[in-house]
Amino acid sequence: MINAMAVLMPTPRPTPKPSDVGVLGPASINWDTVATSVVAAALTAVFVTLAIEYFAKPRLEARKERILQYHKARRDGRRHLLKMREVSIRLSHHQRLPNARTSKRDAHRELYARFNAELLEAINGFDQAFTDVAPDVPTRLYAATTGYLGLVLGVASSDRPWAWKGAAVGLVTLHMIDVWDTSTRRRIRWRRRIGKLEEVIDLYRRKQEFEALVDEILREKLPN
Image (cartoon, rainbow, N blue to C red; front, side, top):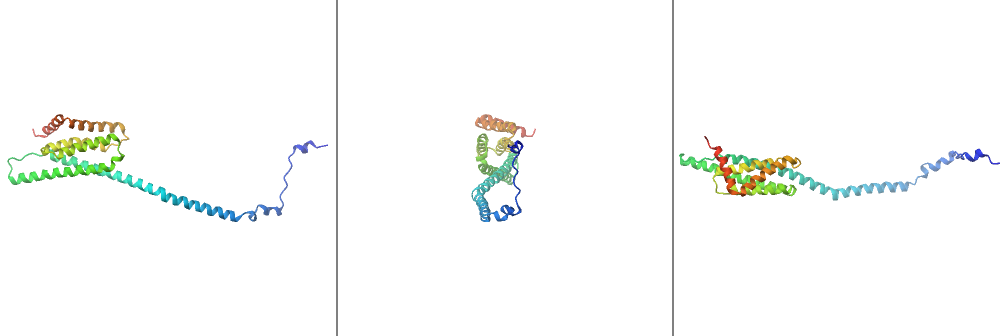
């Protein structure tokens, strides 16, 4: 008769003998396989490192260089804008000296001619800085800035009086500085400021209205 309890109880596993321990010890390890695995892992690591150095690192370095150049161009652009603003203010205060001696009038004329040359130099400098950042700016900013450059270059190269040139360039450059200094991530402020710049550029295309605005600015500068 079969013992029911024996059927239900699991069969105990045999306890390994001391002589059987050697089966699981160092003697059972295939050291050739281990060595092969270690070498393969090392070679894989070397290959991955070399691949990163060869393919990824040049792209990362190039991207880093582009970012550095972009920020340098932004700084250069701001420096040229501030120079334009400074020189335009000086030009806007030009007054004739009809009663002065000839030597004094000549020195006065040379001084303001130098200011006008500095203005053109600053415009060209800003143009170069903008060329460096142009591929990375929004389309609206690109259009507004090219319009601004056309305006200031046209005014500075014209035969207008120096005071008129200074007032006109100073007017529009003030708005360009505001736009240049504002991050596009600050969308509301940026849109408001670039909108003002676009209004002045559009006004310049309506020649008579722009001239009337500049003349009004000059009249306000005259002493009472």
